[in-house]
Structure formats: structure tokens, C-alpha cells
Image (tube, rainbow, N blue to C red; front, top):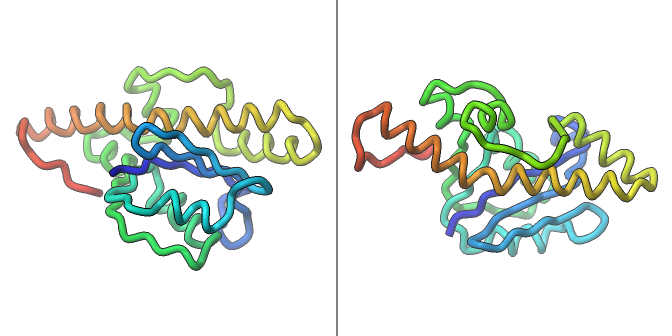
Length: 171
């Protein structure tokens, strides 16, 4: 079973910042774990259990190392497909939102990037309940767009390599 996941944090450093939200699609089940509520090592361990492949965007360099730093007791044995590198292989550069635009994917949220997500978390901590709702919608759209992005990128990869039955490498 694949696990598509994306995180939100208080900054870019896994050693100096905190994990705030972990959103995941496991089969047809969407789950969000939120700091101060249900984001703890046991919940993350259960989410990652019996998973054959992790799918992320820039997760090899950011999401997975951040999660492993936040939960040092967590062990992940699943393969990992990072869609950012698959995008690079087909000539698409940029962040997740940029690739979504290039591939015609849409969003409902007006949150543009991770920096805005950090601000929303800070506002949430200051008591603004709508900020958390916006942050969770942003994270949910990140996660739910991953399978669609994966399909489109794999299609482009097959076209580029002209092998309809070619096995797409796990970057």
C-alpha cells in the first residue's frame, strides 16, 4: 500500500523547528495529525505501518528527515518515491504549487506556500481558529494532489522515454 504524505512545520530546520501537521493518504483514508492534538510517535508509527511505498514531493530532503528527527524512535522501511525528482527527470522544475500549475491542477485554498503555512500556525497558536482551518485545507490539498501529480508525471516520463511498459524508477 502507498502512503502519500506531506508535512507542515514552524520552519525549515528539523533541529530548530517543530512539526505542526502531518497529512497522509493511505489507501482511500485521509488522515491529519496535528501538534498538540493527535500528532505523536505512536500515531505516526501506525500510519507508516505496513506501507510498501512512501510518495512525497521533496520528501527525501525535507518531509521524511523532518519526521524522523521529530520522532527518533520511528523506523521506516518502505521505498520512497519523491515526485520532485520525477518532475526534474521530465523537465519540470519548481515547487509543488509550480508543478501543479504547469500540469493544470487546481486548488481551493488561497495559501500559496510553506511560509504562509508557518504564519497560519502562529496565528492559530494566538487563538485564531480560522487559521488552523486554512492550514489544514492547504495541507489536505498538498496531499490529495500527490496521486494526481504522480499519475501525470509518470505519463510524461513514459512519453519521454517512449516505452509504454517501462518501469518508472523510484527516485
